[in-house]
Length: 239
View 1 (tube, helix red, strand yellow):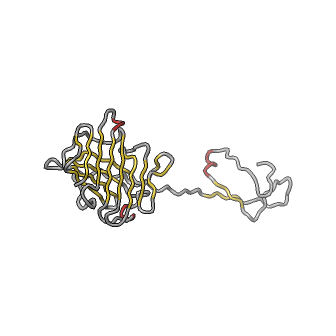
View 2 (cartoon, rainbow, N blue to C red):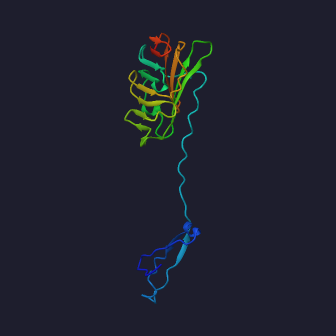
């Protein structure tokens, strides 16, 4: 250091080991150049240990969709209140999913958990044409995270909204979960693109779609009589 002025100075690390130390000056002494103040007491320097606060660990990844549908999921308030639309196109960038669910039991914001921080979401679709249900689509919307420059999940007055322009990890673009009184809650899910794990069409009815939250609540709809069911498109309204 050269020409130290009162209360200022510069420390230059000449050894890599010094870069790991912090120094403090005893406030009872004055820092001055010896040439300017020969009677000043030298400052007391002491090493300070550096510490850091570890970042909170990310939430665990969502578990896979179960092999068979969950029991006790909330159903639409009446027949026809849930719409399912699937498109299987070439190239796979044109694949698409739309699921609308409306009604059912009264749903509060707390029922959705806290996907901004810890509650993972899964969309699971089952073909129940055989003796044992077959899982045909499984898409996850993990809790937390950043999608582009914004958080993937944001809270609203009555629920939560998910938006992922990159369509990762499983092709889900948006989720809107809105709580309300009996018969008025709404869910809207859209997905598309090559990440959407659609294992081909047509499907074998009855088809069951379930959205499950890590909070322990799930919502479902069953489709027995599709409006369209061929190699390129499935469209149906719920039973």
